[in-house]
Image 1 (spheres, rainbow, N blue to C red):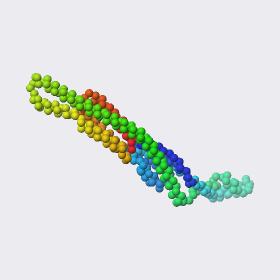
Image 2 (image 1 turned 120 degrees about the horizontal axis):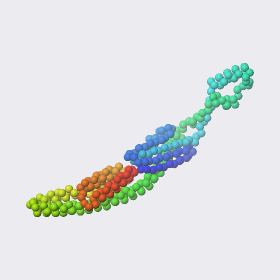
Image 3 (image 1 turned 120 degrees about the vertical axis):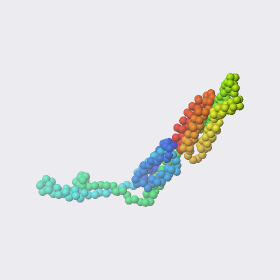
Image 4 (image 1 turned 180 degrees about the vertical axis):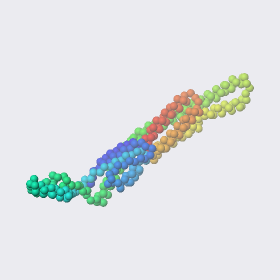
Amino acid sequence: MTGFASLTHEDDRATIGVTVRSVNHRFLDVQLRIPSSLGDLEPRVRALLQKRLARGRVELGISVQLRTAATPTVELNAQFITALSAALDTARAQGVVSGSLTPGDLLRLPQALTIRERPAEADPAVEAQLAASVEAAVEQALADLDGMRHREGDHLRADLEARRRALGAVIGRLAAAADEGREALEARLQERVREISFVVPLDQGMIAQEIVRAAARSDISEEVTRFRAHLAHWEALEAADEPCGRKLDFLLQEMNREINTIGAKADGLGVSDLIITAKAELEKMREQVQNVE
């Protein structure tokens, strides 16, 4: 789900900058930074994001610098000029100053004149064209982000597929080790029964049934079958077009549950080591799946 894209689009009306980044998140969490003048465009930008992205924390920022020059306006501070003129009249009467107030004098007094930039009048046609340019820039940035995410995803998919195959091999070795352990258990029980039968008469039929029940409690064939079914389902989800990150996360929980059950039931040489290996692979896959949309 991680990715980054940034671009600048220029035309006759404005310079438009778009930056978008995404990181891992359980759901789709969108954070937008859009100029207030483009507030009406926010629903369309969100729709574009939701069309391409299904999961992740996404931050998208848009900047717009218009090329239309603002029209300056100059305002005269009448109250200040009146007070200044009265003060100058008093100064002239006292012989302190002479002459009249000139335009140059006013320009040297910041309180006398106020210069503001008046924005150009809104033109609906120009605003519509600007909105279309912003939307096109956002679409291109999202396409670039999607390309980066796909490249990251190819590497991630190869890693997860290798681990899935490794788990398939481990579960096969677990099944074989558990079968050997069950057979060894039956042999040990039968040997123990023969030793006891020399001392105490035993019902051989009943003893045989108990041996079978004891061995059956260590049978993991059902768990192995379900685990292999989960691996097959994983492969099908990977091949599908729709997002599958949360489904893969659920499958890993189910596979971990099966491994726990196998570890509790199976008895055999090397079973414990194989259980540890399987759990380690599942944990690595769980961490990686958090990156999958």
